[in-house]
Image 1 (cartoon, rainbow, N blue to C red):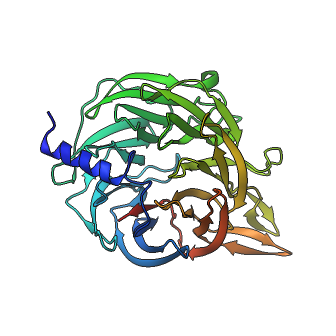
Image 2: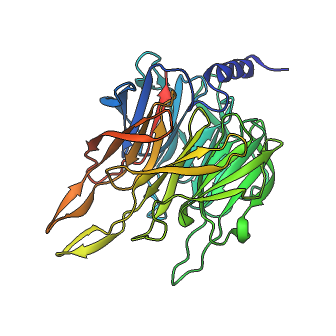
Image 3: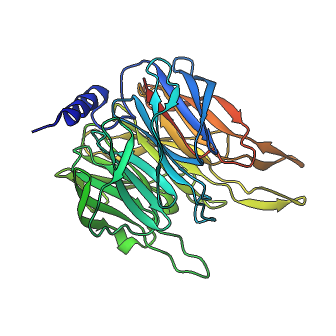
Length: 413
């Protein structure tokens, strides 16, 4: 028997979208949120004109790492940490904080008290009905689940049995049927001093916050396999995974609600895969709300010496666009468009599927003829055509100072 809260969550889920709180919906008001360090700013979104207007900001206990909306779209959960990104110095402040979302404007108001986390959270999501928050930690690699209280504040941790979480967890998602969890574990690239750490997709059965029966998807034993992010097709049993360290896009079929081990299709993410000028890394990916197109980001930021200064070495900073075969799920690359800034760490698609915004997390010095100039951190805005292709519209420079513009996303109101 369903209790009242579960029933209301299920009803909210049905009203919001079939899979999660982020993605598809009819044209309407949208709020975009983007951070610089511990400050999270709301942007008013004009989808028709592909324009953003910065509004008010809220301040978190530490740097924003990731955010995820409640399926009702009335609350936003924000994971924060004082640790440096990657495997940099560890901090001491790690939290999840809830905010109420004003249904008219998208303005955020703190809702209840933050809950502490043990180490830096690198990714966070809720299950499909927003009964629980799932948090992935990269160092050490781990996964924890926290109840969402009746008042929608983050609550106590759900006790787990032994959970095998691989090396360098980077994303956690609950499958559309709400019965399985996929933890993306990137591993680590090899260096002259250290062998490669293998990557894997850790797949769990999931029941009311409890994880069990872990299996591992690790092509080639996880060697030369560095998965970063995944997304599910909105209507078909297909899962797409960006392979960061190999600059690939993989497609898996799903059966019984969970992904199968076989990589059905492996596609390039780069426009020039045979002309890699510096370290390239595939990053975020999203399936278009209509299920006909797939998007991924490519980023690079290696530096070299030039006239006594460190400048950008060159590479691809772009959004790759694929059409999806509606019978087989095969993605075919149809466009690769530069974002006009450096290092597009993440991006998001508005719920109506008409606008894409890419976030770039830091300013970068580049060569400019015989001199140099600085390309700012900020947001690049694209119009999305009926054919899935992108048209660059404008960019917004953001002064990040010595902090990172680490996360952004859009929520339908």
